[in-house]
Amino acid sequence: MLPFCHMAAFWVAVLGYRGDRVARLILGLGLGAILARVGWGLLHYRQIFLAPEILPGGSGLPWRLGPALGYWLGVEAGLSLLFVPVGVLLSIPWSADREARLGYAVATSRSLAPALGVARLGCVFAGCCSGLPLEGAPEGGSVHPTALYELLGWGGVSAGLARVAPRWVPGLFLTAFGGLRLAIEPWRAPPPLGEPVLDPGWIAAAWLVAGLSALVLTWIGSPRVATMGKNAAAWDRVCQPSSTRRSKNKGSARNASRAKTQTVVSAREKFTRKSGST
Image (cartoon, one colour):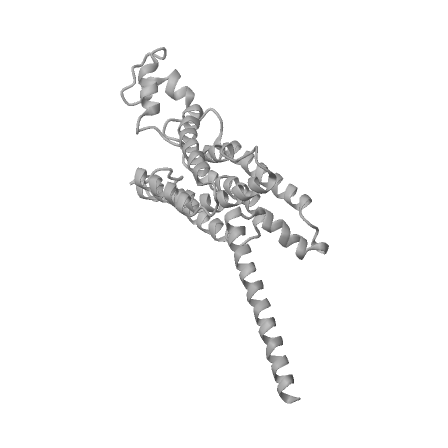
């Protein structure tokens, strides 16, 4: 069930993307999936390479890397979603102008949020990423459904990102990405292979700081509250994907043409009535 949900998460991100650089998004998601496995392996480097006897089928000889690499690349190994956004960040068209970069970041953030929720749905079905026992629960009893907590959190984040002004979307996404994991981390059970080289909480904190920094930069670069209005609307149009702006521009052009036609017809009717009355 877990691989199926991961595939579903990929298609949720692709089909929910509202930009015009879908090939870049697919590349970013592919890089994110690779980095999720690589990052998990680096976090558990000591267990995989220095003590392979603890792995299923391990050789017991630390200098024999074959079993360790086989486990790392095998289906039994884990994934760390904390590294997925790195692949998406690498796919941003950094050589393009600011408008293109912002549009891609907005569309990608809005499509990636529900996809991460679907990925966590697989954890709920698989029973992995479980939490610590509930307070007062007997040994072997109920535990914190941390995967479900994160799933519900991403549902709320997805709804929120769809409603806020585009200029705030990338910063809010990164803030939520790190903040959700930090909020749930105290309830998560220790990893099955043992403590990682680096506490995942520090990685989540880094994403949180990156998101808050992006929000501060957005606040500094956007118009002040006292000068909102047309300037703020123009700022948000810059953050919209170009395909969305084109559709809006076409609609605006049609409305302008329709209004012009109605004005001409009204003037003609007024002139006709005036001529008839004289």
